[in-house]
Image (cartoon, rainbow, N blue to C red; front, side, top):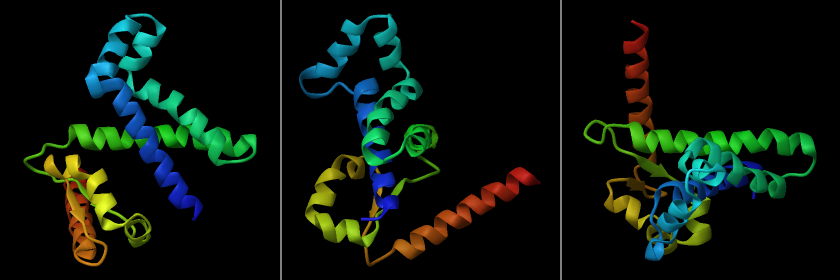
Length: 158
């Protein structure tokens, strides 16, 4: 596997665990109760702040994924930043105007299998995310996203 694959995977793990701990109830409301028990002290504020918590979640991942302190210190905030970008994209886009699409590399589809990918992303699909198949439609999805991004950029510059 390439280092880019591990980076993307680590960003997704960072986002998922951070989102789980900071906003979701979890099974039997375990994470909601954990946040209540944490109160308003250090841990309570940490669990209430997605940005802060993502740094703490990213630290062990950066340590495990790379060797050498220079790489670890650079990867740590990069994983947190990737998680923050995902959170902002998911939470700030108006659903009437935008649609989130997951375009996964074909090796991910074939490595894990379509059934596993769809089961992992079933909840997101029910919420409106478009899961683009590995052989059909991904080019059109990227072209449409590029066109929409370019249009918005031109509007901002003029």
